[in-house]
Image (cartoon, rainbow, N blue to C red):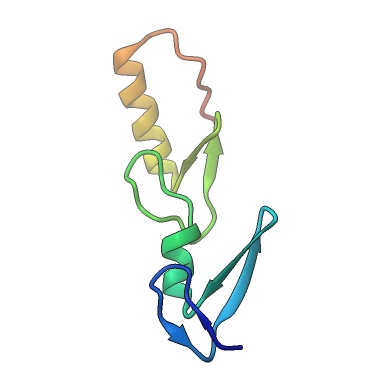
Length: 86
């Protein structure tokens, strides 16, 4: 399949399709797919390419970031609805 990568615009003969939430994306490599589609950690802004932690509709790359965000939010408010249990 010849196509143009949705991320970088490269015209490549070995592109592949990823379907996500009823949309199709065409990529020339996994790096472009990750850059375009991977979720971002709420705390450190890293692209999450493995398992993530989701708490109160926020996504974290690891327990450390989830706990750091909890501590950061707690310093601004003592009435947080967030519950972190690991």
